[in-house]
Image (cartoon, rainbow, N blue to C red; front, top):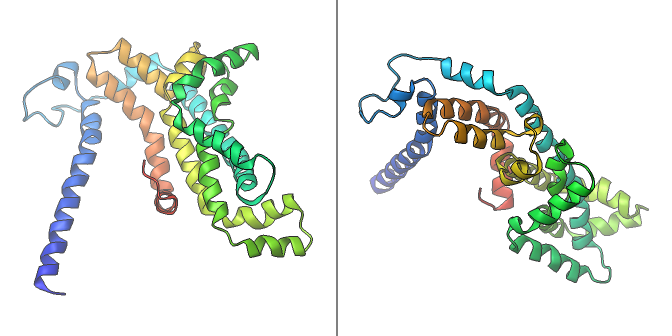
Length: 276
């Protein structure tokens, strides 16, 4: 390795370290602010970065006024069912669009692509009316309802299915497999990385969803972490220490899940070729 290449590598690492520090600084500030008082949180003194005294009263106040156990249950129930439905229905639809020939296939897939190009806010009123007619407002089902079918998941999984050689499918048919057996026993295991990618993206999209939970669930018993944070922000608009404590309580489960499944997360992003 030449001296020039070594210098180039050092500069690249320095830039990456600087970029990492810039990205992590908001999280560090959030964590430190959650242990400060309201006056310390709004202080303009640049030398008061760390709290003079570490206080947990902010967390006690937030937990006392909000049922975080219920919020965790609602949020992760929504994520679980969204992921399950997206993986099940999107993979079946994607297999049909990628490997089966039926009348109107391209037209139907064009409708799926068209849905991806339309802002999701347009579907809120029809979806709300459907949930209301079903009498399912203020339920976990209402939170899951828009994610029962995923156009993004169908498009993503179709690309994975189209990448499988046709010879494998033909060999399965020769061995006596019908369409269902070919899908479940042959094709689905081969797109495992795509299923992981779809699961991760669906979980992240569901966790960040704010507008729909605010609209469809007026009861605090079925609020999610995102909607609860929005209400806490309106109640404590200038108490940044309280807001940051609530934010830490809201995001730590997802950070923990990321560290546990970090390898699968990176592989799914690399395999799918998508960015967050």
